[in-house]
Image (cartoon, rainbow, N blue to C red; front, side, top):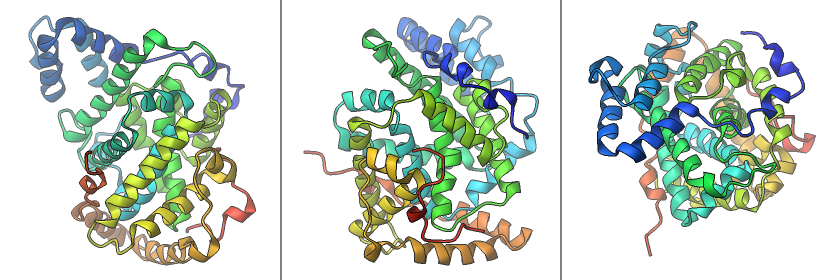
Length: 386
């Protein structure tokens, strides 16, 4: 796909979405509050079996949401949904967990409106660990072959994320400050989340030597455009973002309308990094201590977000003597070359990624009681992944 003219305009059309939510999902949340168990049963049955399986007069808002979910965009290739996200599936689970998830969540927390709303719920450490585990499950279900087909785990989990966003908006609306920070978990924050699992995640993977071919890049955005459809993201924000360059332009527009990360952003990022390091230190096959994993995550995130946003997010600078990225990047580039050397080897890499369990994130739960522009030259110690 090519760049769409609105992405080259001044960000007027993005500014209009600062206060925009997701009308279909917001109406469902209101309907669930009004009708309770009856509407919930209709929603659950409709998501699993389709709108046609419901009674002749299902709840109005539930029916409208199901109708939108079951009307795929004209460009959707059914074979694509059966294949899954082949670009993400080619990434070893350990690196998907360490790079993709941590960078995607940190990218979401970089929005002060989102971070403020999450911190207000309290229990930051427990919440960060729980969101990390939930995001890992959602992402893996979403990219698996057939995961986004109606009634399948990725489809159900994606709609659950959408409705969770709507619930957070409903809970925040009474005391929402209609200032520059915008609507919490509105369209722009949803777009930031979407970019977190596409552009930002693969920029983080590139930092450790796991690159993508142009073909993989285009497939990634085609697949995640359908995820955006299920998430209720306004089509003007994503429909013609077909590669990292287009995603970078979109991110620049979002950053133009979003304040820099604040202390709430830094609090959430720190809690998430700690939860990730604890989880992976106890996972089979990782072979790194919790302290080493913290250093590694810090190094990846500073390379991903650059020095300025790294400072805003409170991510420590890793001393060169303890920075493992140069060695890891070189080894991963070599392994990636052979994994993608031929269609057969690429298929084998995806097969192994599907068969290999991701790090067991229950260990992350403690005992109860950026800009997309290039970072500075000093940020890059390795050669760009092939």
